[in-house]
Image (cartoon, rainbow, N blue to C red; front, side, top):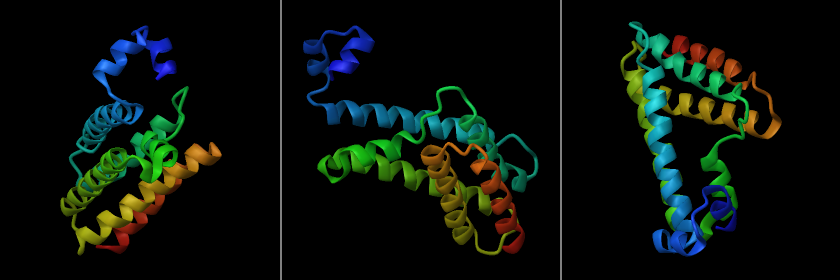
Length: 159
C-alpha cells in the first residue's frame, strides 16, 4: 500500500478508505485488468473474415504484448503466486479470468470447421498460457510465435 501511495500520490488514509486491504485493492486492479485484456483479445480475434485467422490472431496479440517495453508477464499469475490461497477473492478473480479466456478460445474454435470445438478451446488455452509462462519466466519473446504455429497444427488436426 505504501508503494501505491508513493506512485499515486493518494494519501494512505484515503487509500484505506477506498480499499480496506491490499487484497481488496489487488482484486479491484485484477478485475479492471481482466476487462482490459479481454477487450483487447476480442479486438484481435475479430480482425479477419476467416475464423481460423481470428483464432491465430490471439497469438499475434501475445507476440505484440511480449515485445512491448516493460513487459513483465501475466499479472494474474503474479498475483496468484504472491497471495495464493491466502486471499480467496484474488483467487476467484484469477480463476474467473482463466474461465473467460477458455470461453473465448472455445467460441473462436466453434466459428471454425473443427470437429470438437470444446477440446480445441482447451488446447488453445494451454498454448496461450504456456506461451505466457515461457515469456514471463525466461524472457523468450518467441514463445507466442511457437504457440501460434502449434495452434495452427491443432486446428488442422481437428478438421
